[in-house]
Image 1 (cartoon, rainbow, N blue to C red):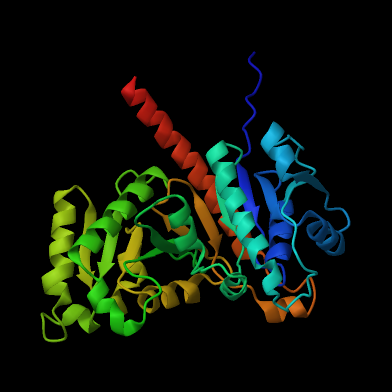
Image 2: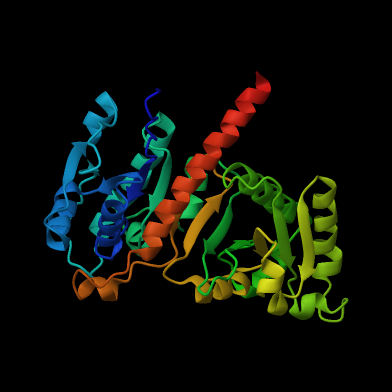
Length: 358
């Protein structure tokens, strides 16, 4: 009788984010809670994380490793009863709830190490805790966010921001991608172009298929204007840009439908057969998703040559200032689970591709 196969836990780099926020706490809690399913490697200041872990729960065991040791010998196997920590030292003492620009570069260094680890094969994916953009900029590094930084570092010309989560009450799983991201509202119409939508739809279709394992993704697309333009009476972007872009995508084999009025699209009867909604701008799509999934939602960067998930909330400095035990790690746990699922789906895609080539 053959011995049962051991399923390898995916190895995920968890960058712990802004040290004065809730990132370190939720990273430790989630990594410990899911240690049977995932090998979560914390990337941050080892001494600070050890102290934080001991205050959360003295039974949590961490095992620290220097960056040089990692580069020399790779990632050791510590087993399920210890959480590995790659030591990226902070420059200044941490006061919960109080930002310090002296730590900005160390926060950025955790991202650099996570990227290096994926490229070296140490990590299967990256999961990021929230950081504070201001401290990195005040440290002298121009920084606009995780998404843009990872795109720049991986030489990726176009990425797509997608949030996802499970609404309460048995509603369909909801994924919302954005055609534009952090733009002033007045700049959105000019940013929606045929070429841009083509890139977004191509990335969305490919990653839903290859990283989520959805064989034939169905994408529902919102209009830009109220009532999707009302046949041109409330704006012509739907007629002149969005509809032609969808027709061209369909000709490329992408099941993208619309444009639909955003105020009526987000109903279970429309979403139950959809794999993703593509919204035209940030505050068109994300308020609906965050209302339905907050505390269970995640952020995914599509288009990268790697897997990156994140929480759907910020650093919560005010909560961190009140002490440990108040932060909810639900979103971080969901981000870890999503990364695990994406690793599995990507491996299956790679296996099928390899078999086809053979």
